[in-house]
Length: 165
Image (tube, rainbow, N blue to C red; front, side, top):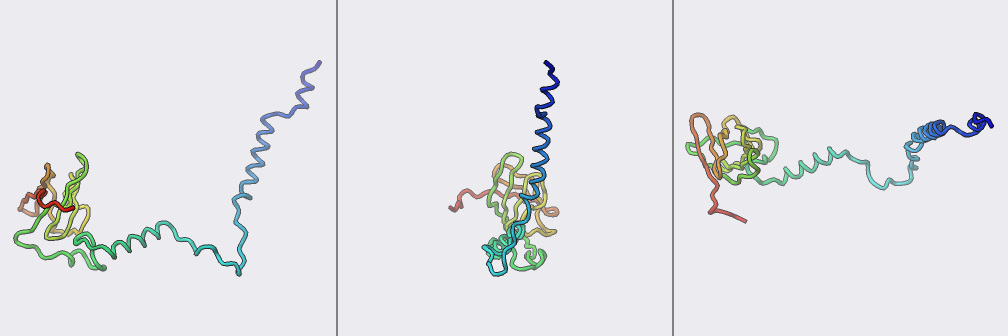
């Protein structure tokens, strides 16, 4: 009995796999083709879609329009220099909050009513109405922050007695 004869009648498994692969590759573009166009009389179930980025921009614009935090939100397109009040002889500096973990501490500080956010390791504020005369963060120590502007160095601490819910 010749074994070669039986092998010629059986299909090669690799050839069958390659054939099915080619068939599926040919069917993929047909499956992902354009949907059938809707007639002009039939209304669309929803309006033209917007991108996620456009929706996020609209949401951010609405949030800024409703923002009432002095120093973090400015009404209208005015410049930062116009929004900051002139420097006082003695600034009112209050530490609103210190939060974060170890080297990633952040502090919200109100300077003359304008709230600025600082991060440990960075001198300049990372959020808020920042201008060239802003205080530079020197350190966050326990419940206090050390700030400097020019030759003046100031220390302010969290007032635990004025806690608000």
